Each structure stands twice: as structure tokens, then as C-alpha cells.
Picture (cartoon, rainbow, N blue to C red):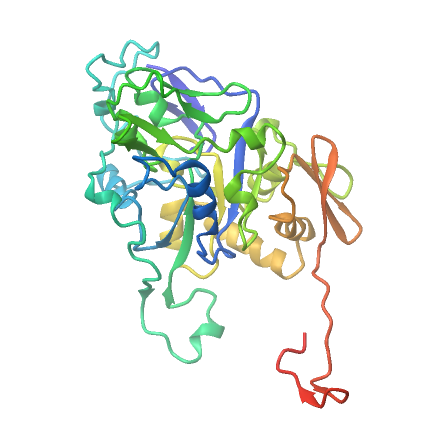
Length: 401
């Protein structure tokens, strides 16, 4: 059976096909500490891509409240329960089974094990959402978890006793996409030039194995058209160097679009001396941005800066064993101890362009796309303080900064 290298797991794993990485890999970084669940990203995506018949239930981009929210219902909880205990060793190597390994399938790797009857996904862990599962896109919205809040804990504790956080989700354009690995018609493919995962709708025969196999449930069946559809990474925009719709429209400026390399090829030099790849820098150098459920085995290419106010045991289940270090790094950036990280957090959402490089120029962060400067922001936001009492207007100000 094919063995492929999954650097997020720290080991090789089983996959239906041989390893074939693209020339460049589309990627994104989301800062969960800044998401306010305004759903502007969701609306931007829906009005652009999912406004046709049969797409009413589709949200290629959605934002859900964790720990109780999910769309479709239980997309993560049900798979976590099926896979059972998922352990990592002290070196960060995943010791459990991925969705490709859990059922002990004997993969051939040349496509011949993708059966004509559409049963390929039976060899992977997963489930097919029912019609009811798609009916509740706001399930668990703003529903908190934890113990009772007391007057002093909100400010004295780094992790709130009562907590929730918002999780925006799109297709992860995975390196080892389960939707592609399960498709009997081989209608799903990963583009060689940028790693975007697409469905050839002309070849889709609606076996819905992709809907079952994708653990993130971002391949969605269109009952009206009789085909599956999914997020296309806004490739018409990214081909022109622009960020996807959900990235560009984000009011909270939580999203950074770019391209990621494997750890051994990462461009992570000193941004004070040279331009470095911003996604590589956050993921590989500073290890502040982590993949979503890496233990599923897909090597997803959307990375999350975990929230600093949620329990680390819950976050570790969701983002892997690097959570505590990522939170520590984020706190250091907020305190001004990591100016390069702070600079990238400021660059997020400050330009409509994708960022393929960045550097520090004095007290400013500069973003580049293919060598051209496309964004420049101060590393520290300038502030001004006004007098609380304005003699000219004879008024008192409540907001003085």
C-alpha cells in the first residue's frame, strides 16, 4: 500500500495514491483571537459562489461557535468518537490511526481500488451527513461552556472559566484530500500549479463518497443538480494575486492568504534582513499557526492561531500538540517581544493581495506579492490621547484614546 510523508503527523501514513505535491501549495492562516463571527466572510462567499438552485444549504465558508456549534451537525465530534483515542508522543509524532488507516484497508495506489460501485469510501473512517444535518448552520451559536464566572476571574485568569470561541471554516485544500482519494469517478483532482482541490462537475456521477470521506464536510451534495460541489479557493482571484473573497472581506482582519512549503523547503529567514514567506514563517518558524485536526491525516493547508482564552486540552484535541507553545508565542507578540509576528498580525487583512513575502522596514511591516510591494502598515498602531475635558466644546469625553 502507498506510504506518503505527512509532516504534520511526523511520520509516514497510508493513502490511496502515491505522494504528488503541487508546484506551489495554496494556504491560509486564521487568527481565532480576532474573529467576531460577523459572518461577513460567509455572506461574501455565498453571494459569490453558492446562490444557485440546490445550493441553499451550502456554506463553503461558515463560522461556528465552539465547543457546541457545528455545520453540518457533529461533523467533528462524530469522527473523533469513531477514531477513538488519538495520541501524540513527546516528539510530536502522531501514534494513532488516521481516517485512511482506521479500517485496515489494503490500498493499491493506482486507482484500481476505487470501485465501480462507489464503495471506496467504505475503507475510510467517516459518515455521510443526512438532510437534517445541514439544516442548522447556527447550531450552538454563542453557547458557552465551563464553570460559573466570578467577578475577579475574567481579568486574573488567562483561560476563562466560562468560554467559547468562533471557528471559521473553508475547504482546507488538503495535501492528501480524502474527497479525491475516495472518488470512484476520479472527478476530484488537485491542481499541479497551486494545490487547489476541485471537482470536475462534468465527470461527477453523484456517488457522494466525497461527502462521506471528507472529515471537514466541505464537499457538499447538490440535490438539484445531482453533483457534489465545494470551495474552489477563489482560484480566479488567486491566479491574479488577489486574496479569496472571504479573506478580503473579513472585517476582523483575521485572515492571511499565501503559499506554504514543506518544513525542509520553508523560507523562514530573518525578516529584518530579507523577505520571507509569511505562511512558512508563522507555521514552520514561529509555530504559532496550527492545522485543524491534523490527526485525521489529510495534511490540511488552512492554519489557525489558537484562542488564548480556551482550555488547552480542548484546543490540543483540535489543533494538535503545539497549542501551548503557540499561545505563548501569541502572548509574546502582543507584549511586543516578537515584532516579526506582531508585524504579520498587523498585515493580515490590510491588503487585498495574497502575500508571498514580507519584511520589517524600521517600525513598519511590508507585504509583497511576487516581488511587488502590496501593503505597508505600522507594526504598532499609533495612538493619541485627548484631554478628558474639552474646554473649547465644554464637554467631557468618555473615549480619550
